[in-house]
Image 1: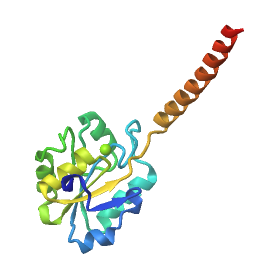
Image 2 (image 1 turned 90 degrees about the vertical axis):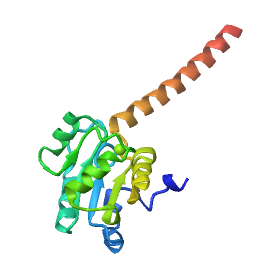
Image 3 (image 1 turned 90 degrees about the horizontal axis):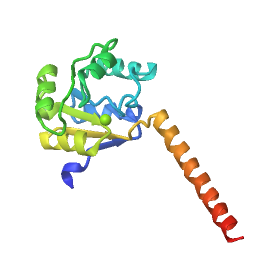
Image 4 (image 1 turned 180 degrees about the horizontal axis):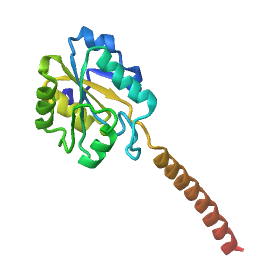
Length: 170
Ligand SMILES: [Mg+2]
């Protein structure tokens, strides 16, 4: 269980306490992309997210994007940001975490992972021995919409079936 428990938890990236990270001697941030920075089906970061990422650099943090997604996804997302980035990271395996720390020039004592998934980001980070920050996953609007549509469909279907059964009894 300890391996699945984050050191810090935030409602979104914007709620992450950067001062607390600094107090914990964190200098490098490994950041997940899908559902952490942007919904999985959205190609580019929002203006607010771009601002947040660039502010990290201003605050003196080193940043490396680390995603299990494809090269295409990561390169497109990073087109404008031009941050150090690793695709097909195979989190929770440790290889990409090591690579990211090399890119940032940091070590396990001053690196944190920020991600939305317990079984990839948090487990991987804790296995590596780095500071872990769990954020609530960003829900895709499209996904939210299909879920709602399905729920309505099921509800309608239930009413239809009920009426159908009543009709049958008459
Ligand atoms: Mg993710």
